[in-house]
Image 1: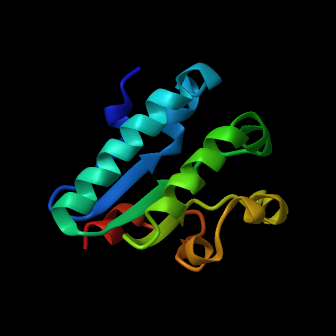
Image 2: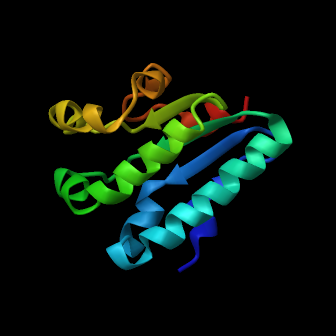
Amino acid sequence: MDLHTAIYPIPNHNHLFIEFPSIKPVLHKNNYDNIIAFLMAHINFMIASYSSFELHINLDKFVLSDFHHHQQLIKDICQYCLTSSQKLDVICIYNYPSILDTITPVAKPLMDKSVIDKIKIFPKDTEYMDFIKN
């Protein structure tokens, strides 16, 4: 599994990008620990290099069953963001699927208010690559 195409830093920025469409085919409970470790290593590098980090997530192709199947991974990522929340500048979610409107009440208890307040949501078709490189 090559996570480098799914989770990667934007050069010369404190932006870490997660491409859900790229990671979706390899998501399985057996590799959650590897994914979290890979993500944590990048976040720690961002904090060491820039003193803070931004998390940018492309949720294109995310469906309700993804939430149910990968709820533990989502919870673990949220927990790690909480432990690093003082260094977290923002979480930008691109290609926000409307299905998340029904999931949000279930997902919110998994997250701390300090993290929730840092979430910015962008609708589908937002030119996110131009945005994060600026």
